[in-house]
Amino acid sequence: MLSAAPQRGPEENAVDLAEYASASLAKTCVAESTPLERDEGMPNGKVRFYDEAKGFGFIQGDDGAQVYLHASVLPDGADVQPGTRLEYSVADGRKGPQALSVRFIDTPRLAKRNRKSADEMAVIIEDLVKLLDGVGSHLKHGQYPERSQSRKIATMLRRVADDFDV
Image (cartoon, rainbow, N blue to C red; front, side, top):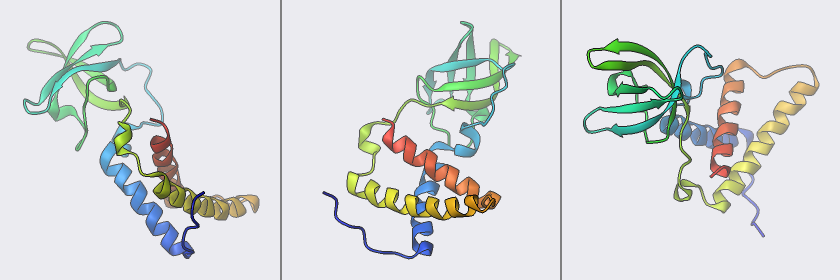
């Protein structure tokens, strides 16, 4: 049985959850790597090979085409691994098709060793439930949270989901 978490005020809960969510942003580049809508006209594919030291790699397009991927078209701080799904535009380079405007669709799942411990997750979930209870009471009165708070909540929920989904 889990021990009870120490009682904390709403401000402390919000800070802990904000730190938890901001760690996720730094790791996964949420702003760039999780588009809300995909452009159906842009090709998709998986990273077949990427050498971070050399700054290039190749994408195997869903249509079978092999596309050159240069580090300069990746979002800042992006972690590119074989199997990462991308959406990109294509231009003809000197040696063939080259990816431009790269956006991450899906990254390979992180290893279990990157997960928080069950005790840490229990505290995070308890804090998240308290935060969502507050939002729920506002929704019952017909009020959505402010846009900035909505984004933070969505980021926190995605981060928690990522820790459960391994």
